[in-house]
Length: 178
Image 1 (cartoon, rainbow, N blue to C red):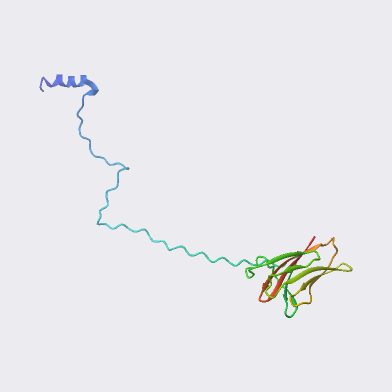
Image 2 (tube, rainbow, N blue to C red):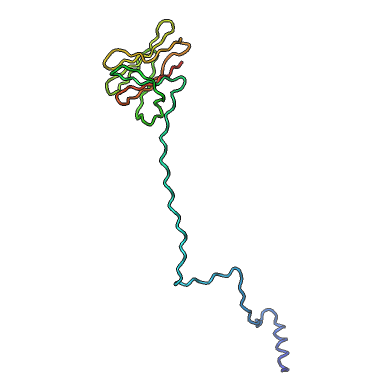
């Protein structure tokens, strides 16, 4: 060994941390966080599997009209033949009916001017012995009794009428109210 090498090592050790220390080269190691190797441009990327387009939503079902239940009288009146028929469903909520009209009668005429054949009047008529009638007056004159009901003013004082026109017939729903 060289006699001068020893003091140099001491001098370097005495300088402490400020002096750079030569270290042995580190061996290369790989870790889990290493970046993946670059993909060669010549390799085609696998396309993700194509999903089928979403199925179109089914068309909304036509709403069902409500049943003509207790408290309502649902009628179809043919003004030409003066024939009155009961209907199963109410006018409101019926998808086949585009326009309805509503009025009340406490004994005074309720007039429906929008009917295509002319104005139609609907009236609650009180008769003796607590007998009551709902009377319809068509544009050509005369009267058609469309409903009869027994009752006093304690039972009902007026009627609410919802009306519409369909295929030349006058449709009406009657509700007896206090």
